[in-house]
Image (cartoon, rainbow, N blue to C red):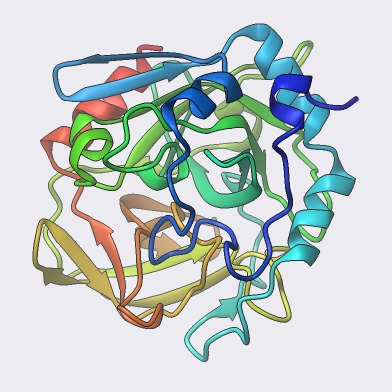
Length: 308
């Protein structure tokens, strides 16, 4: 089934110039307010510290129809961000179904992806990712559409199904000023299926953790040869960085955005505690990787989502 005509006419697969949302941040230019309004019928609202976008049942059904396994493979083949860096290693241990690819159409209607992780929550349905995987910064009208989370994605396989996102929650500071690159999303429970974390488990999440911990950063980068089809990771000790961020030695490429930084990671169980998410690399897109400190604003984002 094709997407609705109002959005399908603008859909494209990104080339190398526009690419996907890279770890260095959004590469696509903002759409005009009129175009954005026509592209997604999602309802947006902002109160206090957070901004929320909700998606109707019809929009969620359209998103699931759009993101077929064939389309997921197609967007992987369309983007090549160069060789995988020496610090990025394929994850070959126990499967981690709580981490997955997050597919969506950006504000220009281009197919792309990020990475996200399921976390413990009151509604058993929250994933954490980067704010730039939900909307453009400093552009409140430019939110994204057809967002689908695929937990445990591996080489075209979707062993735990697909979960359409029914709400995204980001800091208002991101929508207005491109500050605090973190987002929480609420996924809908599939018909005749289980709630997300009942099906795939969950990572713990902690707020206000200081830098200095050893973390494993995970993601699905569009670097070669994996091209988003395999989960990769870096490991290192986080350090404090300016502007409320932390950094870790890591060269995961675009597509890894939003992937979790797991402190206390246990390779035997595939579990740890989310203390940040992949936000951006250095100016040339290389190491180190930067991520936001999960502060009070991030806690407000998460709390809003777990009540959703």
